[in-house]
Amino acid sequence: MFTSVNNQFQGISMHGVCVELLEQQAKNIGKTLEIMPVPETLSLDVYKNLMTIKLIKLKNQGILHSICGDIFLEDLRQYKEDQFARIGFIAVFPLWKIPTLDLI
Image (cartoon, rainbow, N blue to C red; front, top):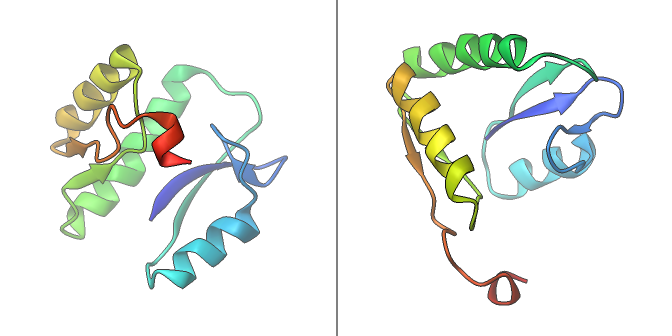
């Protein structure tokens, strides 16, 4: 498992889930947790650079897929697919187009 965590709030940057819950989730499914700490404010270029460094490290460990939890934002999906492909990753979207009420 890999995600970015806001240094100030100690939560997942995009969703605010606290680190403690994230660690428990990883433990419960028997997965290693990789965290990319990020400052509260940062430019897209700095974020992309940090992400590229982390993903190259993971790629060197033999990881070639990124499992994404996106469900309906076409432009975000395309952006992620493009960004991951540039590093040699395949983006996978197992929840894509599943209605939110079904996911709840």
